[in-house]
Image 1 (cartoon, rainbow, N blue to C red):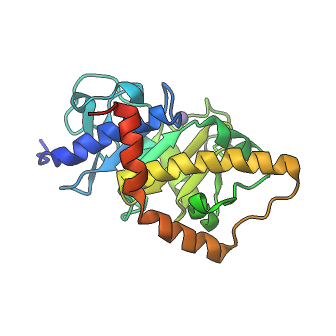
Image 2: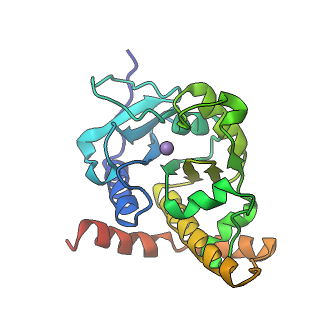
Length: 239
Ligand code: MN
């Protein structure tokens, strides 16, 4: 039996809070998930069992290996799309946290040829380019869910070294170097999509240049706590 030391309680608390924030910010609804790489064993990650993100508590968290097999099977149902997380952690050693969501604002950009691009400084991270995952290329006709290791690997390959990938007819997945980082990216990717859609109604948007996007992203990566602390208050209430 594999022995995995317990994760830092602060990390566990942050993962629970991140789930609540993503729900409160309407990035996830009953569906979607957030995971974090284990702080004491990089070959493991933590994620809730099959549960709406707004309902996740510390007791619901499960440790998975990078094949997305639970280290200890708690005899409950797990997210069918957990392979998104495991295969990205395998392919991207620097990634610490992953969000998978179906945020409605992002769906049109995965279903058309209009690329999602940084329309303002808050989403400079999109300047790296946003690939689209076409599940048919690997799976043919499916139910659209990434619920096999093969599909998870194909998604990770399409993501490449980018921070965000759109999934045609399905949703999006984003990665970050912390829970706060990936939650920030999820919130602002969706806000960018809404703003870009508005701008497209007016005319041809002027996007951030590649250089502006890099500089803006660096600036915002140093202010993650400012957003997180407010979102946490909103999601959990004053305490
Ligand atoms: Mn999904």
